[in-house]
Image (cartoon, rainbow, N blue to C red; front, side):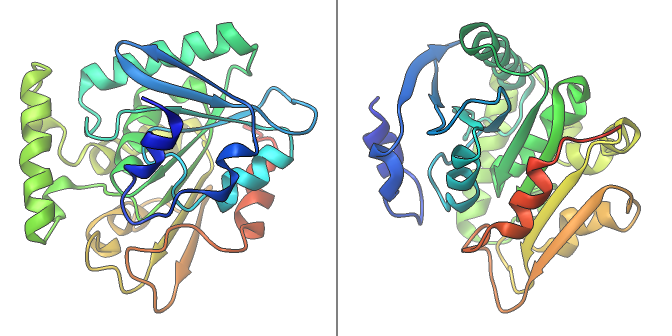
Length: 247
């Protein structure tokens, strides 16, 4: 699948203006689409990875590319962090490092259900994660209220079943196991819309924030629903991401 087609499939986001601006490579790992976008300036070996929605609300990624970061993608959008998808993503991690000489630790970035995967993967592999950046992250798949999300919920159950896994052990995986991220001292940046009815903060990351404060930086967006994700001016986020984590 071409990058153009991939980006056109993204929900609620226009085709990014920067898609022809950067050199990128495409390959497949475990039959999943993978893309690595190379920075314009001197490559610094650091990288930020999306597990879903490449090109959607790209202000942070654009700035990171300018700063020498590699932006990478492994498509597990519709896998809802089932165990097989996490194994596939780990295979991508090792392949990307082998191909491009990238750092041992990376920043994982997830919006909406991509946040569910980002947090779940970080819980399982804290040794690989430098920082986490999520926006309106789903943390409990059973919190989805609308008819559309109920259909996605049914798809999530099917994905877990096909992976031979127990969905009841996974539907609130980030909430149930966030202690592992906390113990590892991984910095987490969380953006959310204060009027988000699609992924209500109080039912999702808010349940984590009640118990964990250290190394969590939250950005609440007044008068913002589920979209737009991220910030038009990403300085607040980029300033924290570009500093190397100390722990």
